[in-house]
Length: 399
Image (cartoon, rainbow, N blue to C red; front, side, top):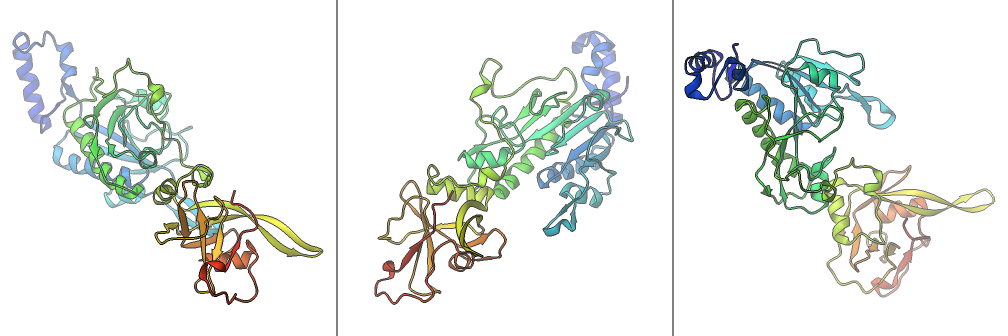
């Protein structure tokens, strides 16, 4: 057969190496032609499935490798989800970053929301997924001669799931890495690990999702390209993960999708550090708060969502007030000096920058609270001599 030798630079060079192997079967440990496919692969026709900026880096690296490989990578087709309506009133169509990247690279682009009834227009022999979010059907993976590969931004089996970068930061982990695994036919992140950042990973100082993404995306792209150059995807693949099969997988954290409840502050158990960390990684955070609304027949309590739109700062100066945990107070003599303070379960005090009350605009804390009736604000400013004497509390504790 003819193909590309792993590590060879050109198709013609690989053909010459194959001839040499056939001339020296016994000397090279190659007993018959049946073993030759273990050392070579056909020119790759890649179906690349991606979505976000993390996957864009891998696609760009693959396209650069295609241009430089002189036949090792013959073609790349890109698959992504179609544009979705976003913004208020769902009037703006926004496409995923990988679609823009594919167009800029002039690669064939296929937008699919489901694989049901869909078949690749070409016959790919390798599937590559990076931050895709859909399980590739087994019929497509099995049709590809070399199966599929996935770039995952964690040290699997740690943090399997759709949000490994977020959970790495939320757990306060200071080491991270990337993994290249084969595609499992029925489950996410259950394939064989064929390449990985050496354990325990690299140290990092990232504090935001964007910082960690920008650190790991080039590592993932490099791991993918080097693995293709070395033919690590050619069967039989070798498992090289840092965690051996004898170790229990139950002790590893899962990276489940980030949802609204991950941003819902639990004042009874979240420390100030925890709140500030979540603010940096997945903010803005939120709570429920009760307001008193004037209605016909008198006042009525309503529950509103309160969004800490621009987060908090930790109060550094000394505060002589000790509000109940999670029960905000408003302190100040004038409209320009009034601030909102919230005490955390570890005794720290947080000051929100801006607040958005459900149904309203984002404004400074005092003005948002006054407009929505979350606290009994007096009609005129108090002329109290002492700054900390002029304060009011919310109608209820945050929930």
